[in-house]
Image (cartoon, rainbow, N blue to C red):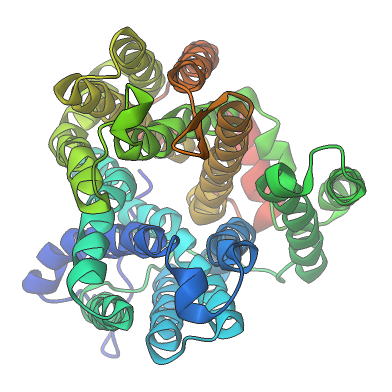
Length: 497
């Protein structure tokens, strides 16, 4: 069993936290995950007005989203590895603190440069979920671990569903800085909660931090995601975008070579290339792609003017409320996901979730004019996402040693992020290509939306096939254990895989 022995206090007795703090560990960590997702979505209602409010261009404002995406993608595997080495609670507290500092900076300034830097700091919060899942593995007995991990995975969707209508309401009735003061307060509560209720895990991966590997990964991912996220604006065949993709390929190839030859790498690629881990990462990328199209397309479709013949002309507040049932569903279905994984195995749960996502897009293709069917289809997609996202960490937990849980889950979250960024670019390309003139403005056609749904549904089916290709599950207690150092952990993992 991977449940660690408690650390000893000064007198040699176990230094266990009080019972109240033990009971609050899961709620506090879940609050941190929800807060992270809320922080990523609260800026969305502001985007149309930020050029006027900050006296800057729309292109500059878009960097408030891009900066968070890039920082989150780069920092998630780096902070995951740091958590495995130096303490997960310590790194988790630091990530939440950086997120809170970013909120305070946004609340105090209207300068677009300061806002972009602040949003980059908030990107550190993307590591909250993998770090929290690793803490849950270390602290909980196996019978409680599955449901807790499923809930933690679902916080991403729950927070996103709550963040949009909350931010829209604040922006509509108060000064926009008020929203960031509110998130600053919530962030401070999250930092205090983790510091008070979560004990530091004794499970560590001793060694030297791979600074060169972290820098290489940062440069490679920045080039890749910058090209993907800005390709629509700069042009996919422009020298800048092609240069970024070429640089990403070169840097990541060199990084891969360096990681294979480093004694204590940032990412253990010997584990990543094993089918149980590698296919889980591929499934995460595909599921992230399929899931993200739902939020992107639904928000735009229901806000489209009625003159288009399909749009409902809803406000941003009403749009957020349309996505809210999906968030509630994710909360309700996370225990079901844990039960399915316990009885049938997480790869079956993952495949089932991807199949449900595809069914949701079938509903969207069948009718995207009636509000209730739009909400139904979006909620079905959210349900499938709950099943899939809850199963992914469990697959990783069963395939890697305890000393590499945070870094391995960090890579899995990174793959989801890359999938979401690619989905955003693909949907934007489709909707930009299929437009019509309505009221003097170019707006996407219904055909463009339906193509986006079809693309996402097909990707979901591919994700289901990838899930079924993962080798059969083993019990959590059979997950590989570290025998001392990265190489020993790797050897155990290869034997267990």
